[in-house]
Length: 182
Image (cartoon, rainbow, N blue to C red; front, side, top):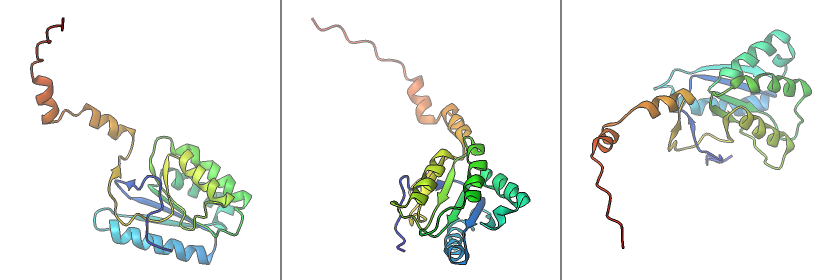
């Protein structure tokens, strides 16, 4: 795989605190480890990272299913490492549906490193990411050109803030209206 960004938005959250990794098997787990290593190298010095790993087999246990669901609903980054040729088990789809609507307005990144756009499984994962309000990435962007706010609250806070430039514009007296053209 190349290290080029294959992403529609090209962004990753301001704070990468909680990372949840879901993997299908040993091979897909190795790919997820590579992605986590990239995240650690890029963000560990500025942000503490808390990574939890869940296999498809883990999601079959009701207690682990609930724990993974709660964790995914609040994670900043979700890495979904699967093999393109296999089907998503019904239990994994059920697990996805258990947390996707619980994210509410929480933004984040959904990374599916083996994206095969023509594959129904990856179209479903892309749709899940959008429903969850997450950016869908197939790789970690090599250059993070911009970041996204943590929540809608951050938009509100920025909207309420009056910068010195804006204050100067608002305090400047309005120019008198121009006389009508006859």
